[in-house]
Image 1: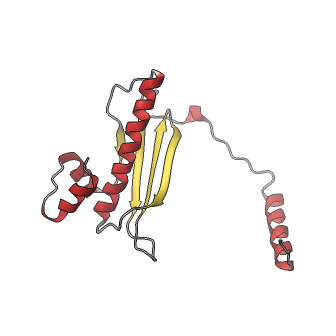
Image 2 (image 1 turned 60 degrees about the horizontal axis):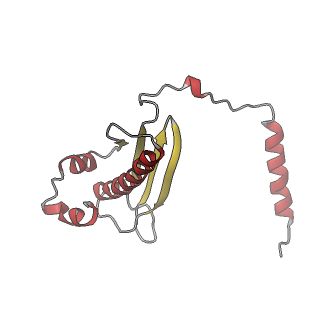
Length: 151
């Protein structure tokens, strides 16, 4: 059972005052005004991680977004399943999760008759992660990453 208090009434009044103030404002977005460097029907994605930002268990927050025709069709934001030991490891973790989702999306597109002819681009901002993903130079300090993410 919910019991309202005077504080709830004040918050409701504050929301109504805000809405009255922005009543004439408009949000406008037109897809024709957006230019895309990607071909029509091409899948591309963005992946990013925030290293050890959860203060209770030191896990990283991971997020990826997949787009086609400038529209997002798949996304995920979650805590990492393991505690990363570096920003590169956290970024590589989300990169691997994003790549798995792209494989699923490409298979779905193929079943629907939309064949992807080119490689799918994943935009990543961590240089170490990009180098590891390109060259798989996983020795010395990065042996544990090879065991966890390379499949």
